[in-house]
Length: 172
Image 1 (tube, helix red, strand yellow):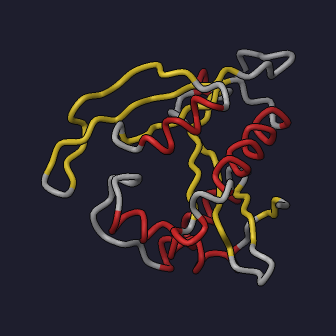
Image 2: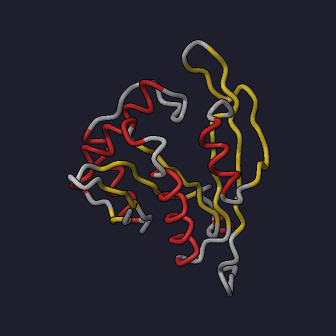
């Protein structure tokens, strides 16, 4: 597998992956599928804030999955912390795509001087929980009954990975 930089040409494929997660899982706490317009706004924000969006394509050029990270909280002291996301198209799950993408986004975070990666994972998503644990993420808290979807309350687990970067952090 090789990581690619996702661009606006990938917006429809990313939209399909997002919408599958919205409609069929608790990976996203959204109720309604997103639109292509929301994807353009999403890419605008990613471009403006220089947040990476990477993916993996099949041999036929189909996007198998993508990973990104973004602002954890919008205060200056959080500038070395990010919240990341990894999504895999349903037909490519259980093929190592998620593991590959998570490893790649970790490496990008290191290259970009990030110190803390945070994953917010629905507590029932054991595949994602186990993937994160296998790559060194540690459980750092649960917010119980924080979401309501599919007729039930959802607990949100937080997993963190402390990176050895940046080498020279500053307050400014």
